[in-house]
Amino acid sequence: MDAVDIKILRIMGLRPYSHEPQNIKVFKPSYIAEKIGLDQKTIKTRIKRMEKAGIISFYQIYPNYRYLNVNGAGYLFQVKDEVQKPKVIKLIENIAGLTEVHNFLGKDLCVDLTYHTNNDLSKKLHILSEFIGDAKPTPFYHRYMPAINRKLSLLDWRILKALRYNALRPLDKVAAQVKVSLKTVKRRLERMGREGSFFINPALDLSKAKGLILFELLIYTNQHADNITIQSILNTTENHYVYHYLPASQTLGNFDMILFAESAADIGQLRQAVCKIKGVEKANALILQGWSDFTGWIDSAMQEKIDAIVQNTEN
Image (cartoon, rainbow, N blue to C red):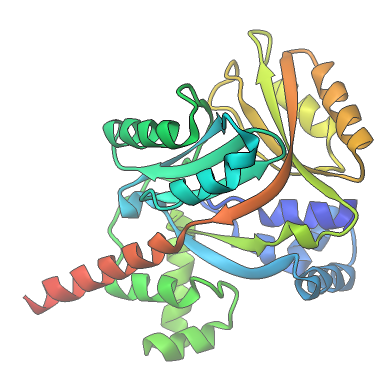
């Protein structure tokens, strides 16, 4: 992988959430080519190469969390004993509503989870704190989703389910599976896309990115931070960052980025460069050891929506 591959992934987007609906054009080679300033054939070749290498495993679709009546957030924990981290991860993976666990070198562990209410979040954080041994985890991001104005229909849910783990499959095959016309599937999907009813993301196995080190940069801002601070950080890390989480406010710390580097020295240089930016209090670099996905519960939640609509129709 190189800076161009990183930019391709950045345009596609790595995280299944945003304040605004996703622009589905981000998966079209023609769109990516125009954004990067390269020809479409080069973009297609690079995407195919990442797919063949296993860096991009597949493309999956996520429903807007609001349809599932949940919110999402990420918290940074520190285990007491680094040697016990595999055991700790095994303990927490059965907590309902977990989405991801990021295992970093050292004692740091980031847990991404969903919750129904603030009380539900407090209970889950309490359980996580007991298992991990950290009573004061640090909040780092929230999974914001677009507002929803209508309920999804039975056909809408069936289309999303048909695309769940093959989000870019030919729509004529989806139409055959859900037993409606291709025109109907296109119309429904375009409407849901405009409404922000779903997000598509490439499922990545970044351990296959040979010669590069994946790490997260946790950036703490101070009272002098503003939009210029954020833009300066992005400009400084232009050829290295794959994704960034925008702070909820200009003065909020805990600005998280996912980046690649070729060496530990590069990581140190990037961190130091970011620390020099006005409005940055400090920056910590965490090297990622593993990235576990626990979103299988979404399949069950989607099926429950389908079953409930069918039952209401029959009654």
